[in-house]
Structure formats: structure tokens, C-alpha cells
Amino acid sequence: MSEVNIIIRTADQTRKAEVTMAREHTGGDVIQAAVDNWSLPGDTDYALVNSTNGKSILPDQALGEGTVKEGDILEVQPVLVAG
Image (cartoon, rainbow, N blue to C red):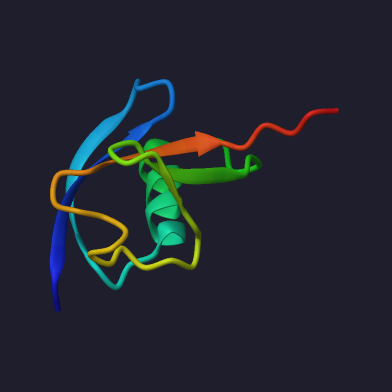
């Protein structure tokens, strides 16, 4: 099982953590861990963006080598609904 060291932060950059995760984990796993660990609002939808390369990570997308590299910064961003 391969692992990757990444930094996860909130969009407002008030919360930040350096973690080691298995590459089998998905974007949804990262978002759920951030919501649980940082007590983020549960009634909000979130997106995950690799801030290092500017690409979104889909909830069902694994943290594979083509998606996330060692030391990348992943940002949990609330999805704003206009209306």
C-alpha cells in the first residue's frame, strides 16, 4: 500500500494539517475527514482542489500519483450556491 504526505487546509486558511494518507483514499475521504476533524458545517457541500496544480479532485477520485504528488496542498472549499 502506497502513501503520500500532503497538506490539507480550509479555503480561508484558518485550519491546516500535514497528513500521510494511503493513495487508495479518495477526494471524498479527505473532505469527510476535514469536516469531522475540524467540525466544519455538515449542511454544506465541499469541493477538493489541489492548490499546487489548480486541479479539482472528484469525490470518487483516488489520491493516485497522477492526481496528488508528495507535499501537495489540498484545499477543502465550500461550494457556494447562488440564489
